[in-house]
Image (cartoon, rainbow, N blue to C red; front, side):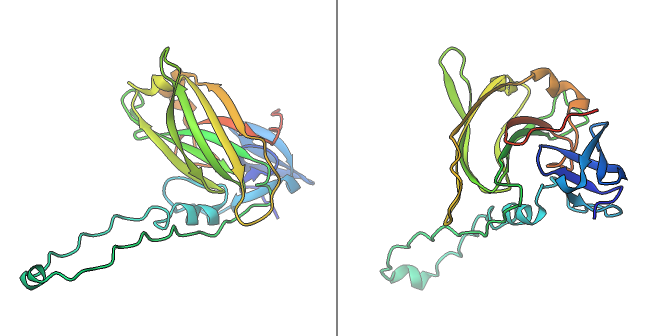
Length: 253
């Protein structure tokens, strides 16, 4: 049961916040300073009231999927160099069969009950929120869905056309690092295009139309402290740019 003080996210829209009060079946959610009335059946608790999130950095919309997606399983440390061979081993080398590449490890996919309706967000995390005029930014893609996304992010390359800012595969309910930017080169992202093909592995799924969305970024926001704030996807301040959502956002009061 949802209670005042719970941190929640919307099931049928992007966003969320903290429950201020409940009247009958309506919960009033503090969403960026606005109290948004939402049916309690359309909310999911991210952090219960009275609990403190002790995990540093980002707060994922699905914590179990986040824990799997951002652990060392997906970001394997480089192997330690082997010890040098002894003189005897160097004198009489033994012919060896060429090493075979290890098969890519598969990871369990944690689906959410709302994740078949896709939401994709481009976000920027500042290295130093207290010095926005000089800090660098980490650009990430948030895949809030039950689908794998084979994606590419494009940016304008002057008069020459478009250039690839990042490409790869985002697993379901995963935050993917794209690139790092400074204020000097953030101007490359004034106009971006996000393209993706959505699919699931080893199971049937509803076909999604290929995505191709264009966004113009307000570059002045990278200098404004109030434009960076924690949210459903991040504990630390971040600038979020919605790219695509199949959920209509509730109208604020």
